Length: 177
Image (cartoon, rainbow, N blue to C red; front, side, top):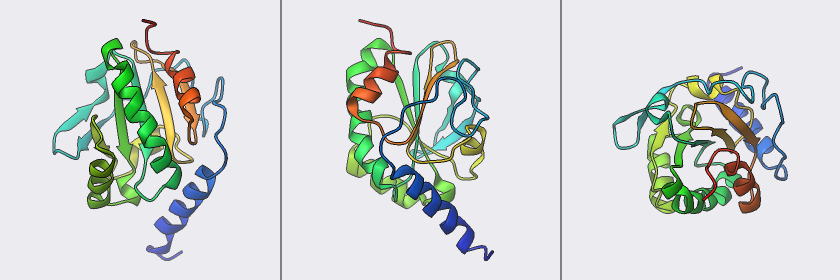
């Protein structure tokens, strides 16, 4: 397949998969099979939009929501305001939200425009080579991983989430107030 067609075909497949109705998270084996509920979250270091480096290990001891997205993903655009609200509501309880742009299928310029449009208050990480999305067995966008304070994956949601779905999954990692 032509080198220019291949990324487009993958992107289209991810978009079509994500356009399905909201899904219920898997109880044991997360989307794709490599990421397991109850196992440590794969560690990573990624550059951020502001040029710094974000290392997942730096957030150990805090609950972390990792959300994978792309600027061209319609369901990601619908879901992102819910993530901003969750960040604002749960920051005092220690929640860290990390949003990982699939820059390997997007552009830094488009990621920056998206971040500006939604006024993202949390780090925007750039998966420029696709290694982190591979480590997390990504098959659709958006995709959210809920990691407890001990660094253990507690839930995975492949696909868009409603506010209720998001709060249900956050309850698994954020201490009750």
